[in-house]
Image (cartoon, rainbow, N blue to C red; front, side, top):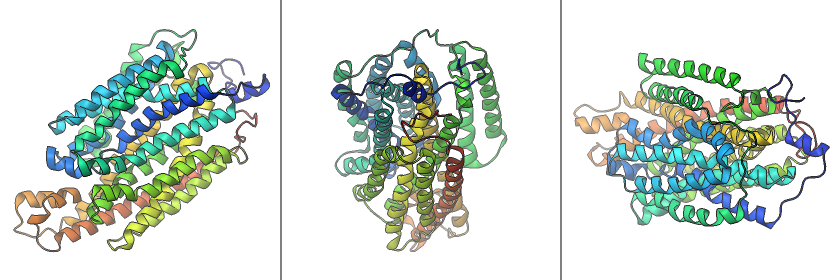
Length: 526
């Protein structure tokens, strides 16, 4: 077990540390640094979900098409996923703290552009720029934790807190959006990034260490181009298929993206200092943890969008009240993110992950029983709380398994992979499950729209529930209730898909990660 590029798998840092002298425990400066890193981490999660409750108000102001609305929601997450691998490796080369500060300044500027957008296209562009800037922050924050916490137990807890803050940001996005919409216009939600970034830029040089990986070569620009050429066509193809079904253009885009993905992988295998070290995937813990994170976030990301729409458009809550109803799921997620690493000191992480995902399956099954009655809100909140319990667990332990399995000088690259699959998972969930629910809605409403309805109202009712709600005053009695019932049925169909997929993930975690020892056991993470 010598070289990470050889035929044998690398020793994990846990095994190396156990074999050598006991690692130095972190002090007050490191924990204060972790608290500082929690701010941009929560902000990044916040921006993934900030617009869920603001979508109706945004739609009334900017009047996006249904496709533009989807791009507004997930352009941010897709651009992060596209650039994370590049930025993670760039941080290892130029310095993780330096990249963090540069990216934070860019994030604040893009947030201001988003806040004052005057058209749907302008907001999509601003969200894309936010994604690129966010891609510099995420691997930097996570990789810096590996530098600050040498003790495996402290590092696992640090990862847990980091993952909890990111997921908490995702959970608080609708709440913050609801509070701000109660008093300001929808764009004000983006401006909260400005003071957070200002604080980070002032305190980062005082609390955070700098780290550059030793003996690294130049950034391979051809690899950067190939990674983008692989990601962006695949993203386009998935979104087009989700909207219009299989056709020549989206299938062709997928094929082009896959060809470039193969070329990217082959180039990485030939380079002495690759953009992405493909040998990392030979580690079973690394690969399985990535799969669990990806598909677990697909289920959560799509369900979150549908839950927030249900609370507003079916239950009839204001953005503020709907956001407050998201509080119990957020608390469940925080509890899981903090306690999962502590439980994993006594119970093997694979079994902890499998158990939490099993509880999530129960939650998704509850969401398949939705209706338009008053009890629907209770079912939504309870079911989504269980789903978020699984999210907190897989985000904390999955991140630790991915980054903890990689050599120290590859922490940035491993961190980028962890965040790539999580952000791609959320965005895919929004695109795939959101489109599945929308397709079910449209099939149901196709034969229920009465003749004689105006063209604009007819198109709105046939497009989506939020579009139908915007023209509710023009609709005949009872039609909006039928639209709500059609949306609820589509939501239930998406929940079935989530329940099945998460069940498979629970079995995969229990079987494929059962060999991973409890945290700080000294057993290699392979």
